[in-house]
Length: 312
Image 1 (cartoon, rainbow, N blue to C red):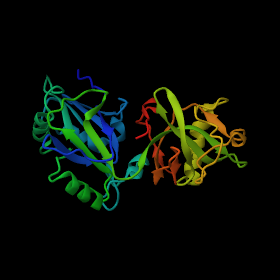
Image 2: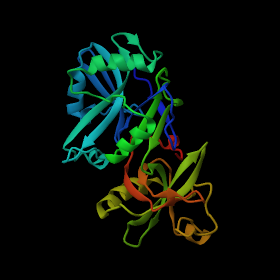
Image 3: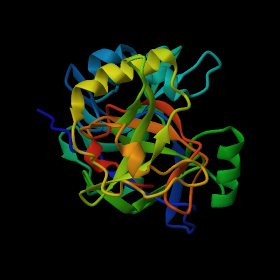
């Protein structure tokens, strides 16, 4: 019986590395997924190895069509909207016109563990495995890093992942052999509290990130929250209420120019929650004080463990 490893992760960076030993591929905006085919059995596993097979039957059927007896394929579940463009919101709300699986690595093939084989060898085998199935191949991009960045930005995709051609697959580790560059300021944060309102709702979420074992406050998130989303989020986080503030850097002592700080007086009216819920947030930039500017809610991320959320 096949056993899936935890996915290898890329190291965040602000620029793509250059050199003949690097290759580049699109960073898709979706859910990291491991697809397992073991005889007639197909399983789709999330980044934290939760079974998501029943949620994506079309992808499961595509994996079942792979012309192998046994395989573990690493890739990304991506939702396409009515215009055929990737849409993370559509994936999260299961309102997509289509959900596809972009495969970018092959970890096991018919009894052979490939994780210690060079990336280029794994890619060649992967291309043969997915041929003729409904699984899409996330092919290496041609051109220089500058040309690739310009092309990916032009079609408004999330970013690029650079990988060393000779790299092995290191399960569950964030490796410098894989480097990801996002072209939009967006990442996951942990919810540590909220500002309640008199109408049994909330005004804003209080989010942060881990540094070692400490949770640091990053900012307030108010934009992007519809009444429906607020109600659903409150139902989820209200039972997690705790009397103690989980952020080690609050109160901040003052409120910054962009309103990102939290004073000691404001602390008294906030509600704290256990830091277990992860949300994706877009923003324009980090301020000099290490806070988010113009933060907006994107979606809840059930596939990301709170303790793994770091500032990117």
